[in-house]
Length: 386
Image (cartoon, rainbow, N blue to C red; front, side, top):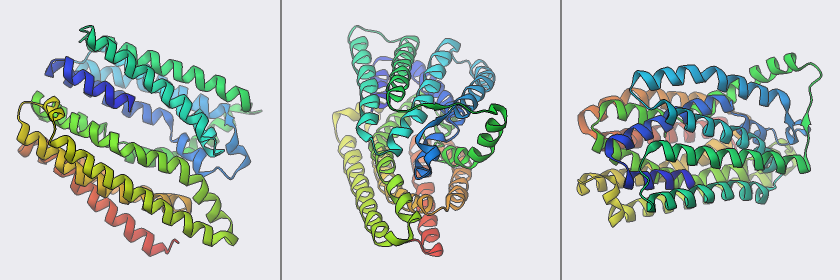
């Protein structure tokens, strides 16, 4: 929520040109940060029944840091090539890497069902960011550089707090043969990285595509609607954090099939509730004064929000099927479905954005999410899970 608040505030205080640069720079840094994270947060959750998953390997941290350093060059090249702000990129990129490391560490708490510890770390960091950016906006701050610095500071504090909290209960595993363990972690983590990358296409690649095609006002309309949609999709991450370890353990134990089915029904109910809240929330925003943040054309902006409302509802239902595939060991099947969806998005989104601007971009998201959810449902029925 802190990230969404940052984008809402910057939309109100920045010019449309500065806002487009800031949003596209964050999308680029977030995409690179996802690669650097290497999917370890999800991997730790899905392997929570393993004793090794209860601690953090030094090889995992080493891989994330090496990838982060390696990706800094390409990110800087892209920023300069498209006339971005180098200082803004560095501030956001280091902040994103810090959050990626913190997320991997916090995943250990989630895998141990210590969600309260995880919630404290995340909430305190996000609340600090929200308070600082609101005070900055009230003081008239409108430069992207300052907001990049605010994001960097809150992210570094979250990482330091996570390390301290982790050290009180756990220890990092020191590998005897670190290089060999790094190679093993690199190979075994590829499937999780690819899976997470396919999920993070929304919020990163889509913004970069729209930013390259649409006009500044249309870019602002799409980004604001997209950030509101992400705000309502936050609940899906909470559902995954809570349910994935439980579903994985229940599936692994053949004597608790009834428990697995019970948890599956609970997951469906929570996902459906999240979708309903998202659909209603997006339509309420579409008919409120908040819509003015998304540009001067209120009618077009309201249409974009309404389309995203439907997309959030469909995406929420699809996420429940994803959890069933992951917990039952069918990760590769889910990856293939998400890859097809990501490929379709990269094809459909530029075309629809070029002809119908932000409305076309929202329709492309709705189309891809509907297609992916249908494929996920078919996959669950085909492998007869639960």
